[in-house]
Image (cartoon, rainbow, N blue to C red):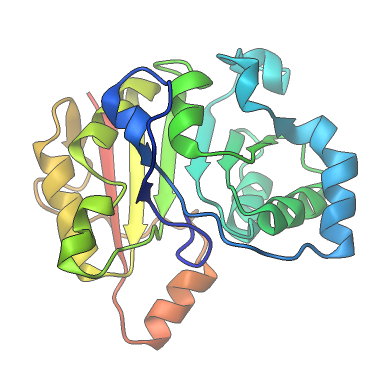
Length: 242
């Protein structure tokens, strides 16, 4: 969930079942102009790689045409790191969720150029996609990299990592599956650690109250580079469903 493209906000209730799932969106949609190439990719590649939220609960083996570990990323921004991961780990299936259409167009364009067949994409709110489209116990990994930190204390309640969200993610992960977060805001890292350490059904992969080293397979994103230029640290947290 890229900081530039979306944040979380309170919204009118949606008919998705649980109160939390009805009242929280995972983004604020920002305007952005698509390039000609991005628009063309949306037209030609969406029928091949696009997923529609109103299609209901997915049969993931059918969606990808094979049985393989499924990695879902919420908020892939312009998609460069997701493309890099899908290219480097062809043994995995990847689902990206992003509401910023230029980012979706860029990812589709680059996936076509790289000849990737292990990526599928939603252009929709992640909260609703999780509730309505992703089967329980189906994900090997869920990735949330550099979400909007909502700096001001009075806005901390808008951060997507909250107890209710942790429970939603736990249900979607397989036993042994991992919820992998990363942020370049220390206060948000501490918030993530507090929420996830208290969440039932998880084990901190690095040990109690410990942050994980950045794994080699997680690319350095432009948000991470920007944060490092500003003198920020980077914190990875990996919690396994038990």
